[in-house]
Length: 315
Image (cartoon, rainbow, N blue to C red):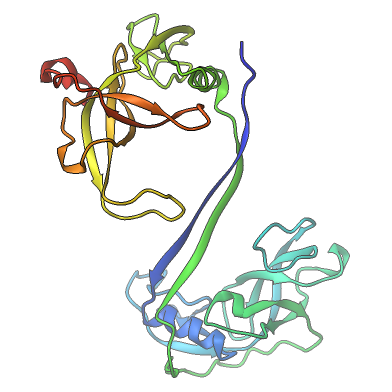
């Protein structure tokens, strides 16, 4: 039995969104070292400001300015900061209720150790040296000796010059992926230019890639079956948007391919034929990558197209 594989995997993409008037005012305010909240229908001041009332769900626009000082309501120590977090040294995650606000803001507190942090401690904002209109304009919080005050926060128009109207936030997930025994066997066979699936002992269907269990019957599958390598295009799509870090010119075709002997279609890129000539029923075969570990794409075999009745159940 082949060794169960593991590999580091990173899923990363930029998340871009436009801002409404409330979030635009809040982030532009941070750029100008001003913290804005919004007054809800029950009189509470919500920071960060919400676009809709948390009680009535109605749109709210009554902006107010709160202080840059506040009180820690709860906290947790972070002994090992990770990539992209606010500070590179150990710090505390804190919920801070800014003076004039009735809700708490989550951010980092720069403190020498967990013994220096406690609920009720006074803190203030440490502003970033360069501010662009993002939550990172607050570099972190730091301890502060000043007393709290409960005065009525003044109203604010929310108007600033050159307002921020959109943000792009990087989203990233780092983890270690293990495909399990079934797919480890499948990947090992690909390195030998073989494609194997597993047959369900109950319904007798052959699944490629194998999953270790039948998704229909729920029973374990451990009988390997070699399939393909040729197959039939069951359906497809034409890709017209170029992906980052993918050296494939558009347009190109991604298709579901029912390999001969398999009862589940897998997806792969089609090449070796103009994109507008790809069709359902096209017979294709794999073209292996340079390192030989997996098919780079599928190309036409030159055989006559498959009859629809042969693959209609796999669409």
